[in-house]
Amino acid sequence: MKRLVKMTLNSSFRSGFCLHNEEALFEEYLEKNDFTLSGFSFGAQKVFEEAYSSKNRVDKIQLISPAFFQNKDLKYKRMQLMFFKKDAKTYCENFLKNLLYPTHKSLEAYFSQGSYEELESLLYYVWDEKKLEELVLRGVKIEVFLGDKDKIIDASAVKAFFLPFATVYYIKNAGHIL
Image 1 (tube, rainbow, N blue to C red):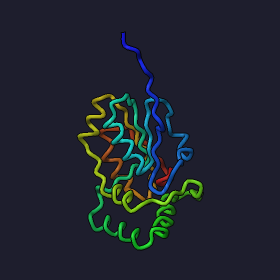
Image 2: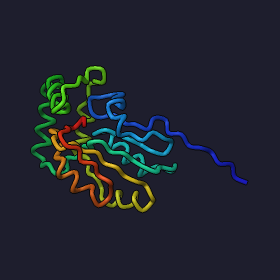
Image 3: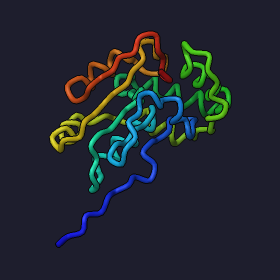
Image 4: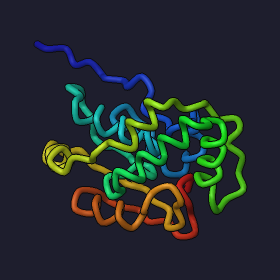
């Protein structure tokens, strides 16, 4: 007789670019259990790939303001990287201002300097529809949370992309940080 072993995910939340341990900002949206993975922005990309590759049970993934730049042209991506390389500190300060819009919260306690490689990775990441379909066929529920006033991603484009695969929550008067 096989012994059943309960799987516990090490940390079921993945952080966004330039952030760490910001999970508390999203507590009202997060489902915390052994079989749900959640990620914010860049962390949403990581959660998706982790769920797709996992040999362990995953019931749900929660993608909060998923970093989605496949609708941006090469020039946009190169410019972002150029500005980061020129002055990473100022780039991150501006990034955090846009991340917070329209709120006046502080992210100082959650700030962690992002790297050029992380920025490049998130900008060039492509959400794969076939992988999304496969996750859905495996029974994984996908939830996407978006703010209609997001200054980082085009929330309307992200909503349209994910609707065939996920339950999408489109939050009024909210930005990237919801």
